[in-house]
Image 1 (cartoon, rainbow, N blue to C red):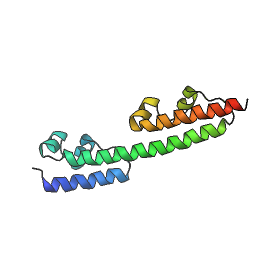
Image 2 (cartoon, rainbow, N blue to C red):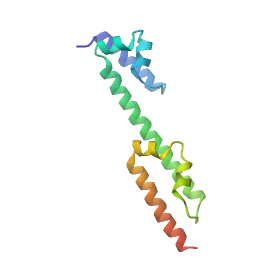
Image 3 (cartoon, rainbow, N blue to C red):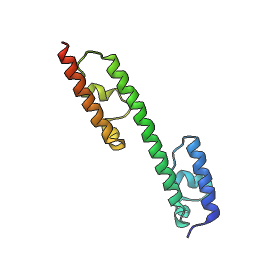
Image 4 (tube, rainbow, N blue to C red):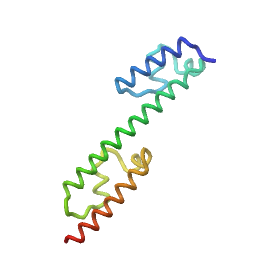
Length: 126
């Protein structure tokens, strides 16, 4: 079983880390609580840290995709009527294609399909 007082303290620290947009890891939380990571694990409190970490990663992924969607839309707008190469499009994103695939595989497919359709239209008007 877990240490309830420690559990509540960890939950409060994780809430603060989310508000401050700081990374949530067992080692980081342990340092802020004043225990070693091993003690946190032995007291059965890693589950709450992992829950908060998953929430944080989900939020990060959603924010990243929103930024990438805006970036893709801006790229298409700046290249009106031009043929767009996949490499050029993905090179202008803040993260690599593999990271995007890991966060949201459908986003890559959507961007690729939009690029294909865009290029078809651009070729019609050449």
